[in-house]
Structure formats: C-alpha cells, structure tokens
Image 1 (cartoon, rainbow, N blue to C red):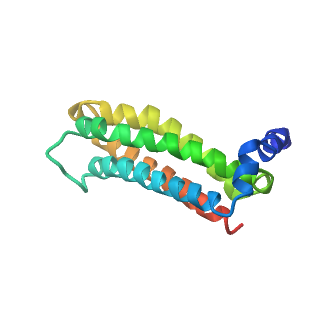
Image 2 (image 1 turned 180 degrees about the vertical axis):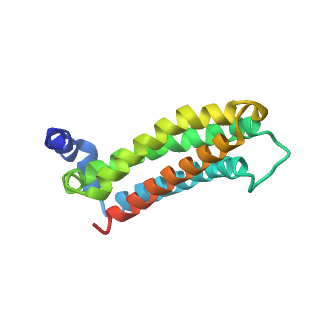
Length: 159
C-alpha cells in the first residue's frame, strides 16, 4: 500500500481538495449528489437483478429492461465516480489508512468489472439460451457486490 502514498498526497494537495475542504457546504452537497447517484445506480441494477431472480416480473424481456435501465446505471456511475473523486480528494490522507475505504475500492472495482462483463452478458442474452441457475447466481453476486460497496462506504465514517 505504501506505493500509493504519493497518489494520495497528490490528491490531498490538488485544487479540488482545497476547494472542497475549504468550504462548509461543498462536501455535504457533493456527498448528497454521490448518494442520490448511488441510489439510482443500485436501483437500476437491483431491478434487473430482481427480475433475474424471478421476484419482479414484467411484460418486458430482461434484455429490453437492461437496455432501458443501462443508460441510467451508466450515467449514475459516471456521477458517482466524479463526485467520489472530489470527496476523496478532500480526505485523501485520512483515507490512506482506512480499511473500509480500501475494501470499498476493491469491491467497487470488482462490481464495475462484473457489471460490464458477466452481468451485461447475462442481461443482454436471450433468456431461453441462458441457464436459469447462472442467471440467479449472477443476480445474487451483483446485489452482493453493490450492497457491499455501499456498506463499506457507510463504514468509512465510523472507522
């Protein structure tokens, strides 16, 4: 982890860090945007996952539903990453030794890779050609990853 210290220092000395840390209202405003975007992202993905689990049934195929919700998920992910970088910048050195932050970053990377590979392949495929067990496993893993990212993000403030 020591090789990342210069990166954390660079972020902590950036203009964004000084701007956010120097304001009484900017951090909470950015955090609110971050949380709303996370809610949109998780809501879109969970709705697909719930359909994959057979809990939510619509007259729309999974691939059509994914096509409708993917722009919402992708846009909110971009907002989450942008706002997250601003939030991180203002507390970079504090977060350097934060185990919840480190775990969140690993889980976030896994969730993004999983979402844009396996999850996207399953949701974009013809439902009759995909094993229902694989579909359910994909949904459970997806939900577990995104829930874990959110819980670790929440834990940062406590540890």
